[in-house]
View (cartoon, rainbow, N blue to C red):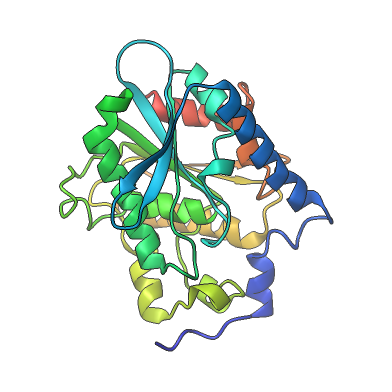
Length: 289
């Protein structure tokens, strides 16, 4: 396989959010993911390391919302340009959302370059099939599954609502009721020309197959797009392009919100604030009927 050349300096700048921050800021945000998630594991009821895919051995964690009855679930998929992080640093929103009656699910997936993007997408789709079948055993309403993710996780969230895979998985087309990709990647063409392709190895054929902008769902679900005010330009462009693709398909354009004062890495930490715009958007999505 011959990959598209990598390292266009302009594209690298547009899709290099870490390099756009002052020294130490990125590391501080990642440390916050880990410390806040560790506190959630320490203090909140949860089920950990539930294997959702026998083929890969990948697992997910569930933080159930309190109270009787089956609850809606917000399934969060971490970022890290498909090669970093895990579910273990990705449950920092659990206290805020479970308090609002929303169960939180954090999904692990195999990381690049050991895993191809096709395998990563297959795995996260398997997690939805597992939740749809097994959710009621864990207090989750399979009719109220919502997904979200940050950066590369936003790409994977969009891949979950994309068309063309649910029938083969034995799922109804509306198995996912809504999505909230944050700083997501929907058209991978520029990624294939960036530093990221050093470990992703994307070529034109794979870009077409793996870009959610080319595989919209047959029917729209609820969709909220969010990004930080201080994002690099590529991530803002991606949100606008995906929104316009929904419009061009005849769907109602999704809500698109720029979060004031936030960058690529701390925008998701607003989910730890009960009163933040991010929390209100997520709760409105997951608690809608």
